[in-house]
Length: 360
Image (cartoon, rainbow, N blue to C red):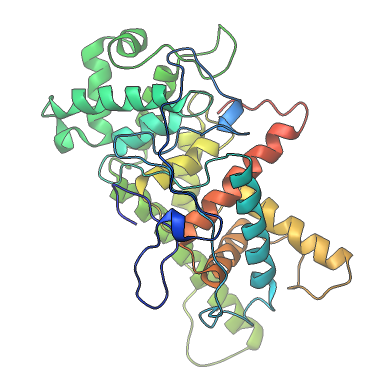
């Protein structure tokens, strides 16, 4: 999947990406502009039948993901006791259900070369119409490109420099963005303030480029795999080959960076953190509460129905992420696309729960 266009599952024989019209139930229809501008809002987090604004930058296009079951589970069957097959079926049903409701299920096109634009879009997308988000991203991109700042205007310090030039958050919002706020109340902080705080938080923990951000995710997942191997070796009391204990600092850094982002105003739910990683180009499933809830519900339903399932009815976030990646292999779809389907479905589930009014 390139940084400019989003594609769906590939043909196993040729490796070529299938256009939407060739996927089961897929469409290849041009999408007209969405009405609305500054102040126009969609439902919380872009759920329901609205686009969430992800991938709103230039070159973004609709391409509905409808993963196709294949007969090749790439050798993963058995490692999950067949549970990956159950998860794959549920992801497929979920994708069809959301597509029928008009919900965008294609992951964001993103800005893999610009952490600055990833931060802006991740913060601006919730409850704002995609056309308004695209306008903000385009204006910020144009401004940063003309500054000749650090990282050619693409990194987080360049974004912070634009606030210094503007003078304050309100001036920055007036010059480059909109006056959208982090919540629906008139007293809520500006999204411009959230962008500045989020960028400051990332720079404060040493994350200034998308490469830095994705390295945090990769190291966290690698440390988790190492921990699992170490635990299995200890359980089996295997003297050889020796297994090194997992590197705890990798997971500690993940938690520190995530906590820094979520401390920015309006970002405490962690939903924009997930969006940030997808916009940056994450190819792995993001281990978070959403994927854990999705897989936990399936495991609990299997256990309640008396069917065999992998031991443990509450898989951790990392285990849930690995299970979704195994399901993606069964479906023949990229893990990031399966991840996005699950993420969007959980947004809808939260929107249906009364009293769950989390902002961003």
